[in-house]
Length: 491
Image 1 (spheres, rainbow, N blue to C red):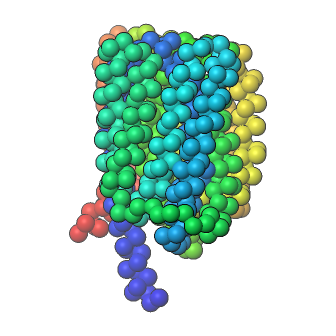
Image 2: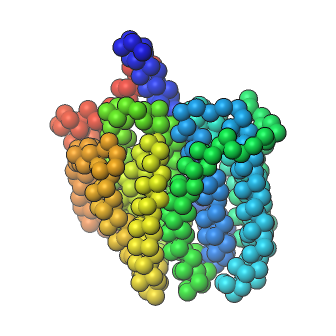
Image 3: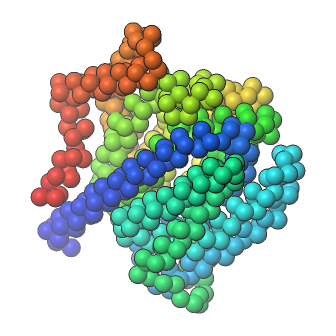
């Protein structure tokens, strides 16, 4: 390939990546608005006990939901070549997996209900299990759209399906359905996604010939699945053990605090992860360009996520009042602690994208053998102390694991420790200034109403950040990198 062709290829990839970012973040912004809306509405229609009862089931069902593709979605996206016969085989493998998960959860539903001592859970588990049948029929469609970086279609389908689910949930809640409204939300959302992905996909699966032609995909998926199972088990274990030891009300409060933090994190990381994995997979044989791309991704995350965690720590009480209402305020301390715990999470997860893009799922699997037992051990220590104990254990574990992970990444990938430090040093300084300003404003405005204190603090923090941008050239270049790049590509 000539230098001119390489240059054009790089420019095309950059343009496609930026378009993917734009579509993904626009779609995710809509999804965030929808999610916040139904969270605010349902938090006022349902009690902490009803939330807790549903999440006793969703802790387990959600765990299976997060690993339901067994790594085959990432395998489809990462593969340099994908033939029609391979897509057919992968589609039917995912269908069989979905049916298997449905039958497994239905069979275990009475056992799960007995474990918690709540007979109502048997029906919740049984109905939620149907999600995996429909999921099995849409996973490979989503993977192919992601591989082709057609994020506009993906986000339109996801957002419309979520809107349908929200309407169903609110209608059920208004008619006194209680926790069944949450079941209706997830089930109707998944059904609508399946119908729409089938409708708008140009590819339709044919008859399966053999699964031997996807052996390399299954190997990739096997190692990634082992890692994902471990990581998702640690994400569910805190709520699993909390519900078992402390009951539905304590779990309901802890879960809402965690969701308040993880909801915006997911809105940031899901589209960013999809686009980053697709782009870095195409750069897996060009390590220098992959490093540069990852540097910008890490830098971008830092400028968005660090100030958000600062707000969650300083204005935890005010945030709960605004979003959930006064019946949830006892979770304020838990929210503060969890905000410290989730601070390293997007940086930790971004490292996983590099391993997946490079096909190094075996290294991911081996890391899981270290990280999963460590987190579980710490959570078991914190569990006897309730929600606060679990939150402290989680925060300590995540920060410790990030430090350990940084000492491995430069040995196993093209990423250097200096890349990570250089990408995050200015976001950390700007975030520290932002934290100091909002802390000072909260102290000075302690007599004002909570909502007004929150808004004034946030406004002053943003003003201080942009003042720093105006006087620090290198920080200004980083903050305006993506807007300038988008403008140049459009021109």
